[in-house]
Length: 123
Image 1 (tube, rainbow, N blue to C red):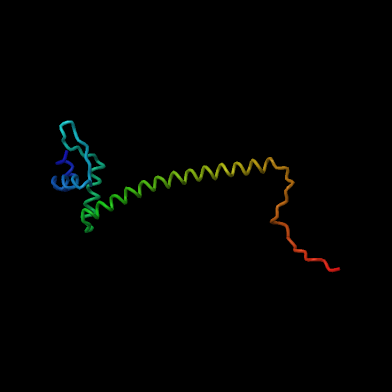
Image 2: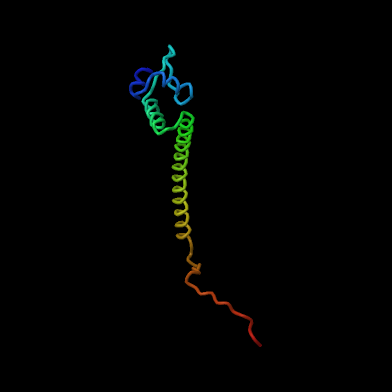
């Protein structure tokens, strides 16, 4: 409920209503339309308070929270891409090993050979 959430976040209940109107917070609603706050909502209230204590106005807080949300999404994408890259690298290593096992060793590595340029022969 709003009074308990306000106490947990050390804020006035009216402040929570303002944040809700601004879209900074979206508590669940009961069947009787009572606001129901989760622990995540209380943590978000504390984050908002931290940002306003730094001197940000509510527009700045909105922007910071949006950027933090975007950063979290991108971090998740990055983790998925890293895992996909690791799987692809493992698959590639397996393919290279398979080719090495199946080859007849009739190829000569060029790294150990010297290449000499031969000019036109004089007559």
